[in-house]
Image (cartoon, rainbow, N blue to C red; front, side, top):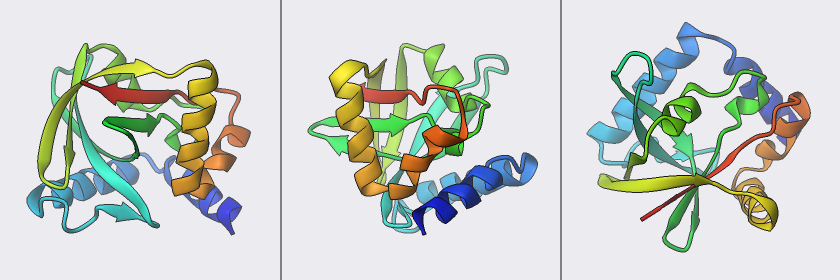
Amino acid sequence: MQRWIALASHYAARSGPIGRAWGRIHAGTLRRTRGLVGAKWLGAPVLVLVTIGRKSGKVRQTPLLYVKDDDRVVLLAANAGNDRTPAWWLNLRAAETVEILIRGRRRRLRWREAAGEEYDRLFAAFVDIYPPSEHYAGFTDRRLPVVVLED
């Protein structure tokens, strides 16, 4: 069942304008309801990541699944296992800090990419909260970055 969910999200992420519109609607709903509606996706927690477009300079708000690791927030730049790197990850890499919104609470954090044992541990934690993510690495040759957000 988890593989079927992973495949469905993999192909949905390729939908272009439809997928982007869904992301804008989801992020807007999370903001307007202060996280009361849309804060879970198949049981996994969802935040809004606020970045600045590296080319456009426009504010971008992206709903993403996340894992809490003590005071840190962990993201997986999987793009549902597609070969295309998620735009939010490219925008994040062009910035020193990022803003997130969880349940109506805003935080400005620094980011870094996990490596080694930390990568393995945090990827496993991500799979624990959202089992379909385990299949994403098998859909692409791209390494799926694990992003750690911290003060």
